[in-house]
Length: 439
Image (cartoon, rainbow, N blue to C red):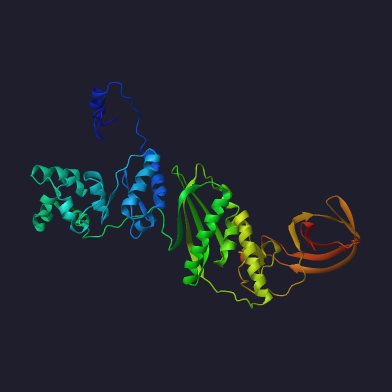
């Protein structure tokens, strides 16, 4: 439509309004455009794990070793064009031996696969100097000197060109000819272990998604087994036909490559996947993996129990979050409030604890109690409790590392009431306090 109205990119607003007086305009949303381009780049991961944003209007996809999965380069490009058309996105696609050549062929050439890839200069020589991605002022100077095409520059001696226009011009020419590598910065880190499923027909039911996931897990676990590894963090990416990309993550407490167990970890997170009109591609990646020691069938019951406990921890962390599943380990501290730390459920004990008097199963913040003068009873939470037996005292001092001044010395007593309940109370300068309850 814009082409028919003779509107072009870079035209001034005054010129555009002169051509189309009824033209509707709106302020440019550069941030929104960039965010949309980044989302589109993420969506292109269905064709390759290595994709990158190229400026404000381009996407680079490294398809090395990929086209055979889509029936060859031509079929792959046809699928890309069809997918972009469904999204109402106009795209020019080019395939070449280097990002620079693909960039030039897509914008100034015929598009598609660059013919005569071994002799790229023959196909690119008639492109304008702007195809080299050089500074516009240098391009204007070259054009004014009569050097209007890539071929005209390539035929000149390199030393005078470098002296007059700088080394960047020669570097750009070498990148175009694939004589110099051009690194790209992928949008997402590429996992070394991954499996992919490109579906003939989009799927939208949970049963179908579960089936695809099992196949992906089996393929991925085989890759890990070949390297004697187990997965620690898995990422499943679903590519919908409308361009939406959805990702879920799960983790394991120990290296694991059991497809059935890993599938159970995905059971609840998969509820967050919204298939819409259908999902046409899945990618499963092991973002981290550790050495795996395979358990033999003759393992002792204790080892088998450890394995079952590890799987339980994985399921709990999947439902509650990794940070919300932990265990307590005692620390060698004088004050009970500081005598513990939080550890991963599977972490090994780091130190041996010295022998102490029994400690309560439940430790609480100290609460004031009223102790009767004769020591026969005390009142806690408005209930009077008669004392049947008392053991103690055990004196605990404040932490020397804190100056010993924040907590004064406490005398602790184990008290049992007449119905058999046991309490841990202490006395300090502030009076009597309840601090714990024995099991």
